[in-house]
Length: 432
Image (cartoon, rainbow, N blue to C red; front, side, top):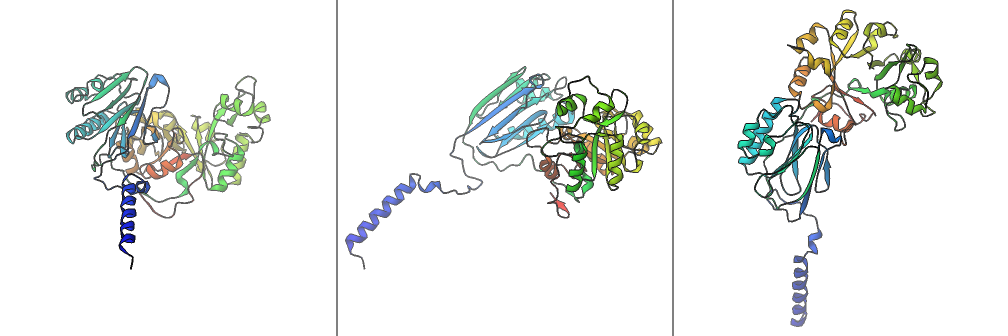
């Protein structure tokens, strides 16, 4: 047994160790706090709001995490000083979104929740149709917000603090200590779908060696090997009226270091390789490639003359043409050509859009993923009618890449225009 002096020494050492631990040494260990704990670490939120005229991407940063919201008004609800949820309401495009925004703000205020608001691009078309309600709730500047203005708001001090600018504004604030708020205002919507490779269209032939939008034979070859079977090509005309694959003439000139008159002649177009390496495609080359790949389908972009193009393509049954006017869609329908109507003409159709698509045997729609929130009701109607919606503008916004669309939007929409193939990990039914 230890004598009394040894025991006393041991007690003294243990006491000092406990004192040191209480001063923070042991606190370096990471312990996941329970949901009712209070964060003791000071966090900062930075809100960057840019109106349409600023031509910049808005963002917000919390606890080192940066998000880039879409057009409209984004509401950020804090669960704690460093955990949050958010949702963007495209109040520019949809009056329903303004109603939903107002309803959420009422709930947040009633629950005395901590939240912030950020505007991006254009949050108002004319004026918010809920302006009177917003002003009654204390959102004086939001209620009077004009189109294309920048706007930020928070209630960290227990009161609504708002700022407005005609172009841009940035604020950086310390987030106060917040008791854990368990309420979920923006639950993640989940979808279920069966993975298959006809959900993915290789955008402009697909990416090759990290280069996008080449519309080249090399990109078709490479992305066919990876798994794509649907290939989009941009079809434009040379100066002598020949159809070729290129996104636009300015981009093609940059890709090839061409300094001559645009558009070039067909013979001039065929002389140049993209970045000196990739083979350009005219209609003859397009037909040869699809003849050699009988399970591949061509999706066209840019061209809006369905009969003229379909009559020159090798197999009309493996052709889907994105078209840009109701007249072109009707012309395609009458001549047995598969049409994919673009979002602009579809949104302009008056009356029952689903019925119009059915009458014209349209099975495909191209939509920007940027307006999914504003057109959510229509997207659901299209899906329920068995019409396949493919979204473009993938990789246009930070973080909104193929993986994001796959995990968050496929199932609501049928598929996407993808730059790169990253879908081999999909195994069987995907529940989200």
